Image 1: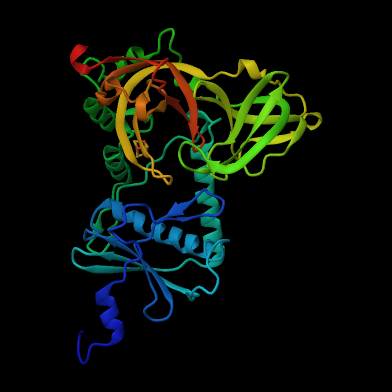
Image 2 (image 1 turned 90 degrees about the vertical axis):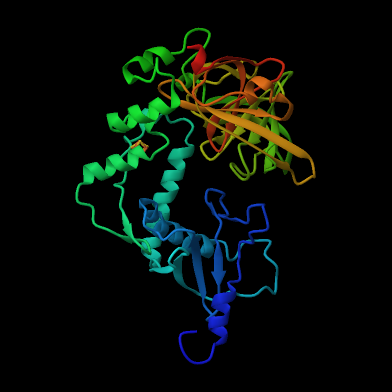
Length: 421
Ligand code: SF4
């Protein structure tokens, strides 16, 4: 209340009806119907009869990270629009009304930043840009050197409330962004100082000099460079035995089928929920640009938006891989540059757990994953800075990028900690 009586509107502002319930640990995300974008809004309110999307920050908004708020809210503007009429929403539900505003609430202050809605045309071109970025991030056929070199955004300081201050020295401001970037150690575009500092945190002193690094990390037999992992191939055969959508090992609803040639059968599956769509059925189909992998010691092929399935007669002049020769394992080595892990209970009430690390071989990075009982003590004890060799890891895929998975019986891990070097 600034003056006079408290109005219902003011009371609602104070009561703050959260859309994201902080007591609920599970994500409460909105997913783009095509599956390539998702977001979780802090608060959506309709106190004045129109919809306003608010993002809540614990800070006063003075850091360079505040630059992201405008893009974040405009992404929500679009996501809100494309998720209003999805199948499966209840009939007779409340119709929310038009979207009238985007706001950032900085609680330390407090400050409120009002962000203009984009008009339809500008929003569409932004969406094109986001989709393009997503495609680049998930194009497993692309080697990083096929992409444009990284170009950091300048670090912009902000006045309280997320108001950007002018940048006077763009080069210096870009260097500050790189100094804060977790990828600086292995980014060719990072300034030397930022790269050396990041490397010193990750690597033991003997290799933290970037001139020695490439030489030290170069894979030696039987390991191969990460860039040589077979990413896409073409197979042909009869498609049958369809199923799904059914939950895969990540709990995502995917479609699957088998491809059969003579007595050899290989499972084909969508790489993620809705990653490919309906798989046709019948004889003499060519499966083009499918990703090879393995699950439970059996070869498996993954389909995503970069894959096509068509009659062999229409496939043109392509070289097919025989089903029995699909590459399913890899030997890789490198430096552990990140560690992670998660556990929980899946939709069927079963416990699950996974541990991850990222391995960098001086040129490329790959995620290494161990699920459930495959998480041995060696993996559990892995630390950032360790040198790791993974022998006979299973090839798998996640969101279009390759993963190396630990098979408890066949994969061997060799670790050299910084103290041992
Ligand atoms: S270090 Fe990070 S911020 Fe800098 S160019 Fe590379 S990826 Fe971009």
